[in-house]
Amino acid sequence: MPLPLAFTPDETALLGRTADALCAYLGKPVIAEVVAEPGEGFEWVLFAIPLDPADTDEDIAHVQAGGPDARILGSQGGLNFSDGTPLDCKFLWAIQLSDQKDARFVKVDAQGEEIGWSETLEELLPFGLGDEPAPEQDGRDDLEDDDDQGPPETH
Image 1 (cartoon, rainbow, N blue to C red):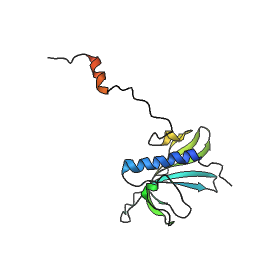
Image 2: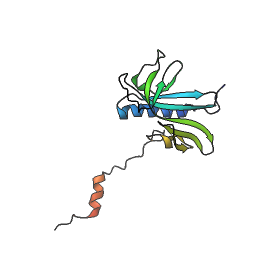
Image 3: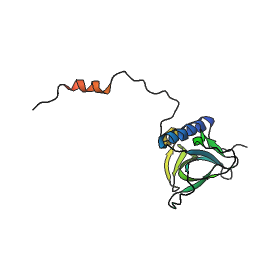
Image 4: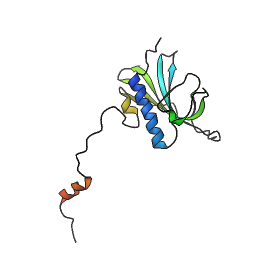
């Protein structure tokens, strides 16, 4: 039986593209994993970076990502999850689904604090990765705008 508050295929695709963009932006693997809370009736997605085993910083919010039956989104940061072994990771943030009015999505930071609410997923993501086409360039160079200001002052 599906959860009442589950991510749609379009939402999981967008979350996967976000993880891939974060990998490129940060230059390291970023994992996005959908986690179901069956007793609570909702899903949430965590974003995390695998930790080096030598990293012992206790101020980092740790989370296990991967494991048997894990729902990893995107290109998986070049990692291989086929053996079912979870990875110790630095927890970046999460987005959980909500049944609150005007807040289908709730963003949670690494300290567990709710830091954002929205009816649209795009408003809570760090990159604009929607399916809308990029705005067309008008062919003008930004330097052309300087020509409209007249000659520079001379003293």
